[in-house]
Length: 155
Image (cartoon, rainbow, N blue to C red; front, side, top):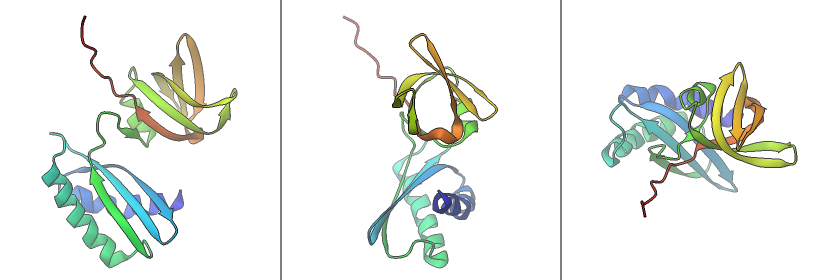
């Protein structure tokens, strides 16, 4: 987690410098080769040229600062429809939407939850699954995503 926070702090000014928001990032170290996935957002959405521009900007910073030792792959993309949620502020922005959560440790025997984000109170997430409410501490969430709403064809 400390590595992710360090990378976030290092890269956020570079992303802002070209006019975008650093939505979040995932860093996966795997032997001698690592993966750094950076999600960016903007007021008009994100296109391929935006990703390429931010990738060049980030690459320059990573080359100078060298925070990742060894080989790594850099991916820059939009968070997409099923965007990952990284901060309490992002969760607050999606109250009323369907989300999927994976917890670090089981809660009432399960780690995966899917439901409607009811509210964010202090450092807790209220999740409504069917007719049951779960209050989950933010720090217990390993990963959270919006559940992409797929349009169903009318028969």
